[in-house]
Image 1 (spheres, rainbow over the protein chains, first blue to last red):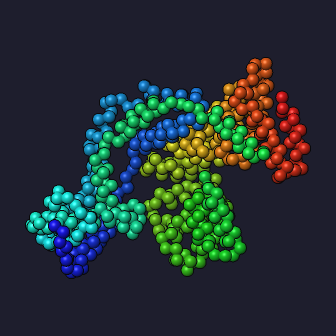
Image 2 (cartoon, each protein chain N blue to C red):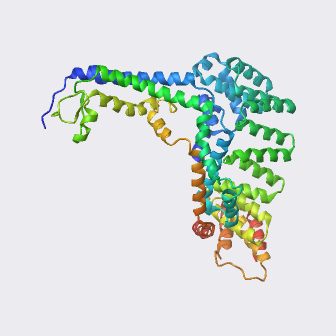
Image 3 (tube, one colour):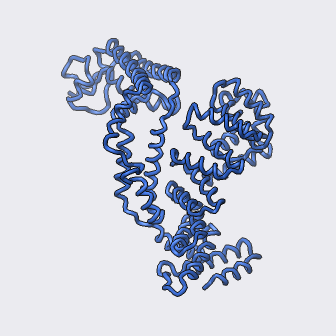
Length: 246
Length: 300
């Protein structure tokens, strides 16, 4: 179907722009509300220490070739020693982290607050869009799409012959949802609570973080082959000096 | 570490402000960002901004950061009254603030009332036992009182938790070197090299410590690290070629009679000596005679 539908400019004035404006305003409102509701969370010493251990182990792995072999070996033993190595986590503890996170009342409250502040405005806005702005073609996507996208992008349009590039306002809503993140970091500065996509990604990789990354670091450290880079430097220094002197 | 471009920017701004051109606020912001210690200038220009009500209101919410910066600079310049006034203003605005509590502790430190400062810091630590800055202030206090062993103990405990803090490792290395505990200092410098392998300063310091420890293996390792310093600084460092000459002659002395392992870099010492002579000829020609006689005595 290659006919071009001519869309009324009134659609642009009364649908696309107000929808974007409303989403921006709701985002700003959420930012201020989250700032008001933010409670100061005392950092857990164990988690801080684990984070630092991971950084140090990572440094060791990255720059291992810059220190002599003996210090490297002693540090590696210090980290991955079976009894009291820093990175060694006995199997039983791995499961505890997640259970602990759910039973800790403070953390559960925090999680709930963050989730609520994300879910409620999204749901409300989505319902509003569906109620007011459904049943007509809102925009045309500049590139062609396959038929699979029809159910996703053309929810209110009950004609099956319309080209899939013509989408309803629901897709404009989703586009704004993911696209306004950049705009928000411009207006509100870096740390804003409207980073939904990032939060959604974080929620999936939750709970296991400390012990898994520790064992990952330990495996990485065990694999490292120490190749002392310093002898090479002597030759390079010779070359540098030769150039200087000549 | 301040980079070269930032350093030139800072110096040019400083010149500008010193000679009466504007830009005091940018200078103060840059000093704050780079964490450089220019307390007398910060004090002078910060105070002039704060005393001028028009300029003060132009700052908006940044005014309070400026109060904090001037308070700390005043402590450094020993103008404790100014600090007291700044703290009073800050306390009125932020009554329950931990940052203001910390400033109070620093004021007590500067006055010399160590016990009260210690009490203030411990109470702040009770609320938040993971406040890095307060831990470091306690170490500084122990060091200022001359209690080096306690400073070492506190710093070690701090590093047990915050082991990725390379400034703390650097401070610990300095303390160990001052106490001649070279093995521990070598450990700290290794940590520093691990976290920032391309900073030539740490290679040089590590080589110095290894050379001081002595022993054939350490001397050879020290020579390699002096070489890496030369490489990382493009030959501009003057201590490193000296280090190489000293190491080579020391190795020769220690391994007298055993087969010398010069297969790695036979010319390094002569090259280093020549580079030094050239450098001295350019920059300090009157000392060239001393240099040549010293080098000659080192050649085996």
